Length: 194
Image (cartoon, rainbow, N blue to C red):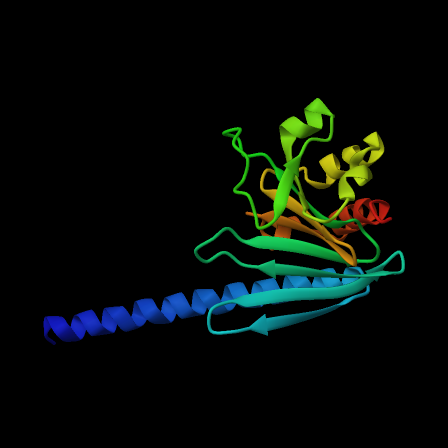
């Protein structure tokens, strides 16, 4: 056996091990999402493409439909998102202020606002898309407290678009979300409905 044959055999073995690890991880995510869906009386599905695989959960909480999605990490941190459908403020985006103190990059047509609550404004970047008047939804201290509890992880964001509200957690693994945690987040999101 020459060195080229040894190299090819070793490469094939490494490729097989890598593919097996990917398949086992995908199966683990699918099984976990199915278990989570069962715990909340929902359904689970997997969307696959050549580039990515997204694990979805569809269910109802307090008579409002919601969807959870988990996108595993490849080149970016993994992401878990909860989308709740109902009546929410439109054009509102809230994210944790980066540790450096700098605000996140301005996004198309949105302006950063201050709520007047120094502690809240120090922790979060609040943006309202031009033409929307969602500012008044943050006047109540109880709403700001709910949002602070909802965005308790470092890399979390809230997006409210009128007919839905979405909370995104980056850098989270699927196993960190259980049915009790999910219900707790959904209760907080439901309280933000208008």
